[in-house]
Image (tube, rainbow, N blue to C red):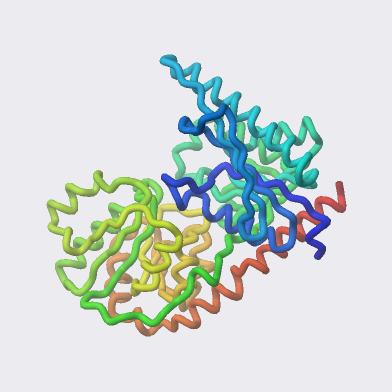
Length: 390
């Protein structure tokens, strides 16, 4: 496949920032894979009150793709609704400036690849109508789950349906997400293309013998999605029967809402909160953990399960997202969402048997099924089909 004959412009509704280094990192992984076979540019626009000019543009080469970042000085007044309105318009203008710059200095895009429908779907849709540039929508969002309360907002649903309807192709990262999107009302033929992983970054190393067994949990701590309170209930029960473990928690948001439960039940010596970490730092936590513990009510994929397996550790998690596809019958234990009794039994068992799982077998499964080359081929074949029928 000739890399030179496909020019893809990527729009990311979610992307990592210094304050949120893991936000949307799975979108960047898709782009890293795609750029192995297709010329790729990522365009990111955001407001920054600290810049000296009204607008600053920076270009850098990241791995195999080009990242163009445009920072704009936000409009600030005492009237917040006016600030929101004007800054939305300034972002819109900046994205169009970025497209003009790319067409002049780099290439004319054959396709726009929109990663997550909102908020940037309106940009992709405008470009399709104004400049006749088709777009592909890749969805990762859990909003399509029937359990997601945001579905009650009819305006959001209308916007999502419009963006999907006008896409030349739609992809989902798991069979479950595809099913939810179809139930949501999306009529497109949805292609399932899973998330991918940098297999060189996520790898296993020989473990050091530690005084206690280390369980790892990584999430936003959003209780509606991740059910961290359910994990706390199970840890509270476990401590009554054994004291040979510690739960390490890497989290995006504050854990204050759980602090009273932890204090009341004297769980401080069993649970350690580590806050946000970079990808490189997270790898070291996987490598020192004995297994990963997740108890999500719903997921679209669960990158952390894929990362854990790539680092050679088994997983206890719920049968949602792509987790059943990844864990199968021999890479960990699966329980139903909200079933705390089953979770207690499986975690208790895993604490005794985690060492029987082969790190090499766990890693090889991920390497075979979710490597960047495989995902790159899937996307680029889809692009080619679209361009052949353009």
